[in-house]
Amino acid sequence: MLPEAKGGGGHGPIIKWLIEEEFAKVSPGLAFALAPAIGEAYYLLGMAPKLVDKYLDAALDGTAKFTFTGTDPVGSFNHTEAPVFAVKDGDDWILNGTKLFATYGTIAKFHFPSGKCDDGKFRQWYVDAETPGVEAKAVDKKLGLAGTMNGDVSYRNVRVPHEQICNVPNGAEFDRIGNQSGYIGACCCAVGGAQGILAKTVDYMKQRTSHGEPLGSMTVIADHLARFATRIEAAQCFLHTELQGFRKGYGGKPHTSMLKPFCCDMFADVARGCLELWGGIGVNEDVGVSRYIRDALTMLAADRPATAHYQQIAHVVLGLDVKKTLSI
Ligand SMILES: Cc1cc2nc3c(=O)[nH]c(=O)nc-3n(C[C@H](O)[C@H](O)[C@H](O)COP(=O)(O)OP(=O)(O)OC[C@H]3O[C@@H](n4cnc5c(N)ncnc54)[C@H](O)[C@@H]3O)c2cc1C
Image 1 (cartoon, helix red, strand yellow):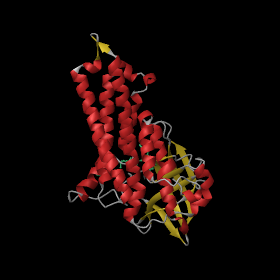
Image 2 (cartoon, protein in one colour):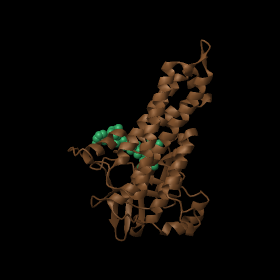
Image 3 (cartoon, helix red, strand yellow):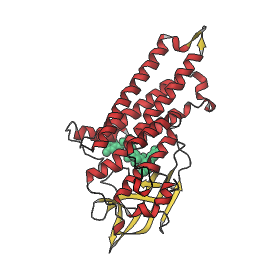
Image 4 (cartoon, helix red, strand yellow):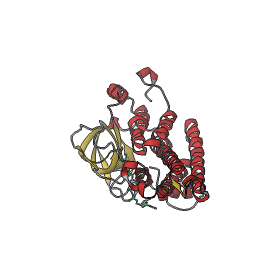
């Protein structure tokens, strides 16, 4: 996704998302890991162009990992209770605080922490992982998305020059690039993951027999599978429409906040329903279907849970007087 002039492929994010969707058929966890590895980071690099040259080689050979550290222990969108993370000191900022669950938190060469400043505004910086005061601890065990590593990152008196503030043009653009694209990536993992477990389940339903007939030829089971296929198709249509919309520019309507819970709820429902059709063998880890449900459930929390997204929809689309909590 780096520019061709820099030796990259010059691709936009859509190709990355389609790759994520394909990978997710086999491993939603690996697909989810692609998001910060090859995606949003390069978009932010566009806002921090000095980094492109510094990290070009490592970015091109895939060894430069980036991490977005934004989730404060008081809650990822609890802006009113968020502690002050950054204080201005002359031409520098001093960062103090902890950020949870950052994807690639322990192996990233580069961090994009965001948080509240002493003037009450939220800002984002780029920080080299080697900067004194930056420490990361791996989250060793989690429910699912085992292919994605997470870390809790602490910043203790980390001094960052003012010029390392991300060159974010405006709030809407930050939201589109920093947040919306992450939500879309999660949706690609959800749609691909649902396609993956459904395909495996349909195959099994053709092989597994009862009373001499494949289970899949029984109306009740065929009906379940057809309903799952329909929900996946609907989510994929919504997702691919949104991909086109992203290409054209964020139009101010928070469709991704409808899309993220829509796709992730669908994946969780399909994974649960499919797993049930495998009977006892489905919970045997060697069979490779139970991890889809763990991944699906983990994705309900990643990239913000449904309540946060629907709150945004209620506020912006329905005009209800609820607090708008998602955008910085
Ligand atoms: C696999 C994975 C990868 C992640 N990667 C990253 C990453 O790279 N960088 C990063 O910064 N974070 C990352 N996160 C963290 C993730 O963004 C947060 O966990 C998520 O946004 C939820 O925030 P929280 O844990 O603070 O939940 P809480 O804020 O504690 O929320 C708990 C529940 O209450 C609801 N809730 C909270 N406040 C309100 C409210 N005002 N109104 C209504 N409902 C509310 C929430 O929707 C949720 O259902 C990752 C998480 C996971 C699971």
